[in-house]
Length: 373
Image 1 (cartoon, one colour):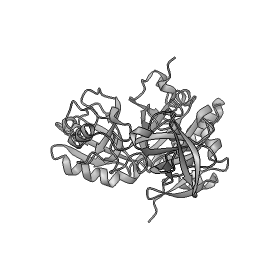
Image 2 (cartoon, rainbow, N blue to C red):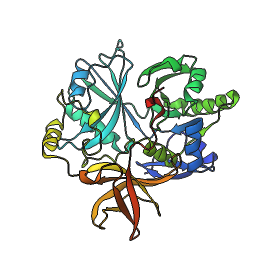
Image 3 (tube, rainbow, N blue to C red):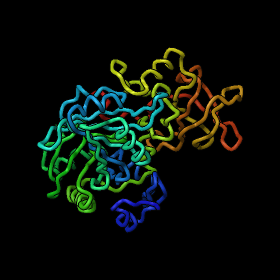
Image 4 (cartoon, helix red, strand yellow):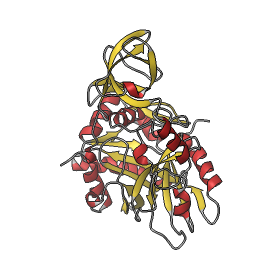
């Protein structure tokens, strides 16, 4: 049976169009359209209902050491309140899921607590994987149902969060988490996101889902900050431009982080599941590599063949779309390394017709927090 988030009726009243995603009936776009939603997020503030994603608590004596063996990136050097991107890999080095891992401060009831955000389609798989590999005294608890998750993203997002939370969120470092009360509701606020813009992801009690959502929009209007709800279509184009992977497309259990250009999220100085397979792949050399290509004469879509200049099929698109910020028709594809150099001329077969394409520098849109000031 299709699931819904607790804001489903709000989205309906706002005129959203819905579509199935990861077992949820999710808002894809609102009446203004996905391109305008994309541009709104780039110029001001976009508000995202992402409660289809999952949250997992892991704690107990030795929890950090145990979790470290499951994930690709180093985490034991993290301080309380810090966040880090990591990958959950299978024995073959394929990506089960990509995660955001937060280290929390110990409490009277939780020793060495960790807060892990997982993707919606992998929630049950991830929790089962954690439970299979983490034994007592380490505890694993799926808190997704009682936790609501939204994202506030854009150039004015931090300003808005500063106001609604009553704290100097602007002084909070990127990739950390803080806690505050918003409209009387306790919230965890992570300075992270999936759009290429600065902002936050908010975690708070599910029964307050609508209260916080509406308060943010109302407050933004009072402050003269342009803000609005953003559907999954614009979320996809935003993350695509910023070079962020989507599970089932740029990453999957059959795609390794080396192929997906995510080796930076793997710390080979420590042990983790999948490490041996990745080292073996490194020694043998890659047979394919992720590239971004710009295409002329058509819209590249997932599954479309990528051709060399002689018309031979050398790969496939794993995602493709119109990118509103760069005003390009672009795709991500896996091709042999010999064809991965920026400037390499290729083609994409669109409904049987070869359309010219060229490999371009990734990402198409440099995230604001990575730009030199």
